[in-house]
Length: 299
Image 1 (tube, rainbow, N blue to C red):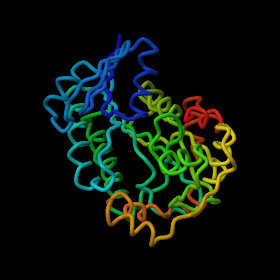
Image 2 (cartoon, rainbow, N blue to C red):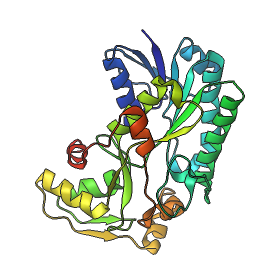
Image 3 (cartoon, rainbow, N blue to C red):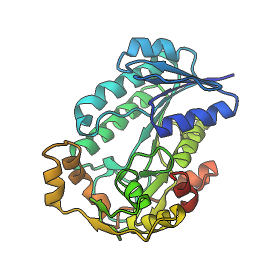
Image 4 (cartoon, rainbow, N blue to C red):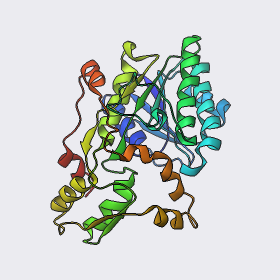
């Protein structure tokens, strides 16, 4: 029975753990708050920046999955030491190192994004994410670790944390207007939690995957389309949506540092920043889930 260590306590981390456990693998999920064990899944409370302690927990593991995250506005300060500690644990134990990434590192791109698209981030969060992959790739090229990254779009599905889940789903289900800091009729690339977890598992199991990034399958859709479909599934009225102005976002930022951070990723809101995950789908036999299936998970 193989052992896999997953660092992170979000929906993608737990879904990945459950996929592995369902296949008879032993899984250890590490998160600062711990949690209740499940069949085949051990939950451990640990600050993952403690690389020595994490190394002990990862001893004998086939794979270390990095699904960790920190407070959104602190990424440039908090992500590097955390990711460095997780990668160090993989290096010391000989485990494969699979990172859960996102699309921020690409920066403004015209046309479909592929895994080969250069990362040219223009903001601090994107630059941080890009730097974390560069460090992992350097460690891979130096023979210190086998590393790969799975890059996901905006999350959808049960437990997802995204603009849609936070600002659209709840008010739409309750029949209230939703005010969203995004263009409502431009296409966005959404990734279902389950699809991302399946990609992480597939990458960890395939020797062809190492030393490069992979794009998780995505669902191209507009915010308005998703809201209308979600309302119909929930038996709610046709939703009323509006886009927040920059001034409204800035005013919200006076009391919550999350809001101003959204300005960095406005390039994803043009309708032209879309993902082509065809290479991933062909390599691992994966496809994006149906949008209604994913939205139904959120009810």
